[in-house]
Amino acid sequence: MVTILNAYVMPAVSSYVARLEERLSEKRIAAPLLLMKSGGGVTGTEAIRREPVQTALSGPAAGVLGAMFVAQATGFPNLISIDIGGTSADICLVNGSEPAVTIEGKVGGWPMPLPMIDIHTIGAGGGSIAAIAPSGGLMVGPRSAGAVPGPAAYGRGGTEPTVTDAHLVLGHLPPHLLDGRVKLDRAAAAAAIRDKVATPLGLSVPEAARGILNVIDNNMVGAIRVVSVERGHDPRDFALVPFGGAGPMHGGALARLLGIKTIVVPPAPGVLSALGLLVSDLKSDYFRTCLQRPPHHDLATIERVFAEMEREAEAWLDREGTPQAGRHIARQASLRYIQQGFELTVPWPGRETNEASLAQCLANFHRLHERLYTFAQEDTPAEIVTLRVTAIGRLPNPSLPRLPAGIPVEAALIGRQTIESADGAAQCPVYDRTKLGAEVMLRGPAIVQQLDATTLILPSQEATVHPFGSLVIREVG
Figure (cartoon, rainbow, N blue to C red):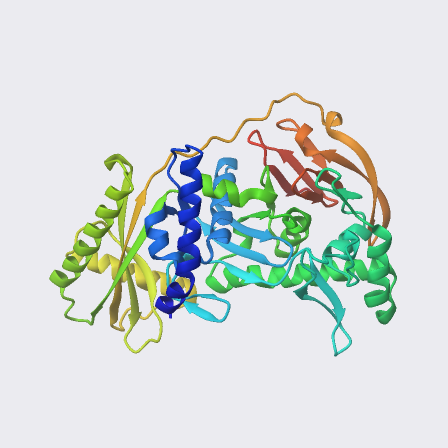
């Protein structure tokens, strides 16, 4: 399947990359062109022109790497990232320094057994359409208004009520976006919600708008539980990193529903994927089927297969011009219990193949199986199915600029806005994020505006501006 998909997209992707290289050369840009892969990490154009299928989910992967970089710089290595755009929400759990990588991903309905960051996607975003289901209840998404015609508030002919319209009606959004270039029509948003949701359900427009947000937030909470609770993780042990154009609007509500105490809103949440590209290392994965059934694991064969892949990895690092000091090669193995229908991939300790490293690899498998499925069968033989090698070439990371301290919060205050909640209407301050200094504290309810996103701080939440620019939001009551 992967071979067919790769052949299908190769002409278009290869010619595009070639044209891009030509234009860079014409402009005398000497920096190498690197492209993101679905498994995280970047590689040169030669590899992508040969295997363009490796870029299938490169955009979401870049977002996860950007979220990791910002969260770790802010002091939170364990995180759940959620990238909410106009049509979808991409969710990933990072436990430590690396995101989980799967070989059981899909693109649409097609299986894609290539290494890719383990991202769970649902149809939930700012353009998700609210409608009355045949059963009579309220449903939101996965249908989306997209960018054209877009939400009713955009004034481009859209008549269906969306999540963005609900935010606008409740006062969560300013009357314009993109620094005034996109004006929002609150009356059109209210009319769409009234006609399609409020009147059929016998609700007021604010009640219907809150219902729309409640439904979409609970849809996203269910998706977050897929990557956390269903895989043996308690979401309360992680910081939530919402990004994308709509992410910071929902972060506070999602964290509250999940019991997460800390939210980290990146400095530029709407374009975090671009930062993810800049902070990525070179990366390439190699794998071979090497079926080894117990009790007679052939250590010589395992070492030979590992060595062959490591020579390929070293040759790739040579072609990419990676210095020896910046190289890292790691071994992994995919194992399963005898007669089991799926494998789990675990680290192979070190770069030696002996009885001790094999025993440690088997122990890693049992521990991972127990964490994911609550039990391990250490008395059941486990077989090795696939051996893997990951090659990484370290690249220098950019530095996040530090914000000046000592700036009073009043310097960023640009107005006040009425927001509607279940407790009634209330005035809340609106801040310009570009004018916020380090260590400034904002108490909810509050709205923080910037060019690429709007952040909503709920009542009983408090936001502190980190010196590197992130908003760190915590529950305080």
